[in-house]
Amino acid sequence: MYFEDIIKKYTSLECVNINKFSPAGKTFYDDNEFYNGYCWIYIGKNFIIDIHSFFIKKEYVVTNIPNMTEYIFLISNYIISGSGEWLNPYQSIEPTSMLIMETSNLNQRYVLHGNSIYRSVGLKFKESLIEEYVVNRMNIKKDDVLKFFLETQNSATKLIGKLAKEILECKLDGIAAELFFEAKAKEWLGITLDSYEKKIKEKTIPENDTKSMENVAKYISDHYAFDIPQEFLEKICMMSGTKLKQTFKQKYNMTITEFIQRKRINIAENLLLTTNLKIRDVAKAVGYKSPNRFTTLFKRYKGLYPKDVRKYVKDNL
Image (cartoon, rainbow, N blue to C red; front, side):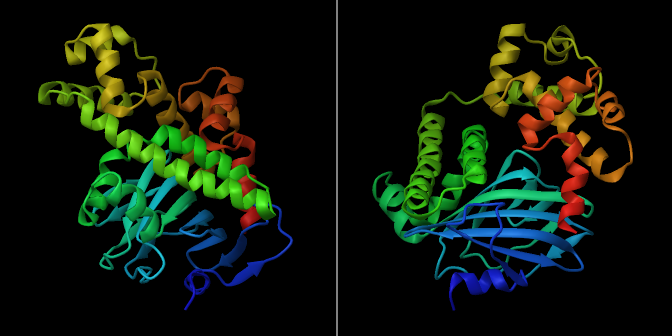
């Protein structure tokens, strides 16, 4: 059995002459009870790159993961849009996050919530690539590779997000595509390795400060639609403005402003999918007085304009 045969178990139709993705790969489509949309794959020498673009119609629970160990050692996914949970080990499936999967563990389950868009770009690393760079050069035991990726998933997210966007927008073919995707696969792994080395050198955040940052993040999550003065957050965590900003960024790998923006845009996407609210009303509901500002940020984080979200769902039906 080839890896494409595994893909065909989840998709019913191979598409030709479709311009959504690079012609160097293969595109598959499916429309079933739980989801509809596209899966694109490019198979390299020691890696596989894939793109998933689905509308999840209703709660989708997967309890049977196919055995991919013959082809893949470990999977690193960048989630552009999504709502769900990976259950073993537990990881939240949410926008602008990383999802790490180990193929040797067949006892894995995940849930994707209904009425949501799932878009991701993934790197499936073959064992030869992991052995060459992670095991042999980094002196990390093969049994610890999953832990290695999990420890760096937060710190590597932003840079890998930019890389995922480049892969998503690539329309190259032939030798140009071969060179492009090989470079991106190694860059993806390189970002992960660099994040790991930086994490080793970085000072650990004291437990009290960690709890303070979690309190700040929870407050923001509960009050995302309001203007939140930094001075108020300083009182919550009992820190100076400088220490608050530095510690928050070290903990969440983003500024407080970006954290608020991402929270608002994720909520906005859900409102666009589940209500008939006009875009200006959605913008207002999540805290933006200016629809133009809202549109700019939505495009930055989602890769789509707000007006295209509902159209995206209709086009995939």
